[in-house]
Length: 342
Image (cartoon, rainbow, N blue to C red; front, side, top):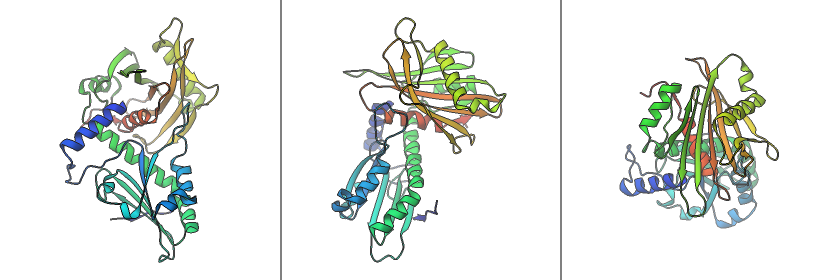
């Protein structure tokens, strides 16, 4: 049922696993159809194509298609597909993220509704019904940030479900014993380096034109002061770690944070495991070389051990899209469990 909203890496692996799962078992454990659609894809349903091609569509595209923070080249937060309402058949109802706009003069006030797993699983369906386009814009502006978070949360859940189909139990166990945290790291990742209070996990994907790499850095220290959440401290700490542990491919080269053109962006996250973390989105580069790409990190406190921990994921995929790989890493980090997994 709908509920009213109050005012308020492995891209290849993911695609393969999803298609394999959809082909071999189209029902979830609850008996619902498994949802479809690519990572970061959003199905927009309007009354007709004219709406999508006009101001209403421009408004939706400007928000959900806005650039994802922390990328060197603009990539939209969501790739959008539009259909007219009359074409919303069973095939399209399986999409995992669906946004429906219904301009209905029979209504006197706009109404926002949301549903979890309405037609498939996992799925998020959000609908705005408004008597006019003008009132739609007001309702959309009022709730769009909430809508975005609901769609992003669904992306994490869906990506996590795919990760858990192929979790590298051995590697996850090594990291759990070392840091007292459990991460559902998929197969293909391997432990590249380990040191006291540090681990570097990598996954390399061979492609015809340019190999892709996803990496995870985990580093920790005793928690003594809230300065660990200061943005400058977060950058300095990362640079210290990568200078020591993450060399580049040539002599005297090493990974560092790139701040010259696109400074890192910091956000306080209150829905992270453990309730509080500082998210950092930015770019990395290799000193004395020409490599670079985006990274995303979460700095938080493990209350049980009184340690500050940073989970840091980076992507190397030059001249190609990177957001879906970042979503893969982000989903892993949000699936963090403290201590041994039950």
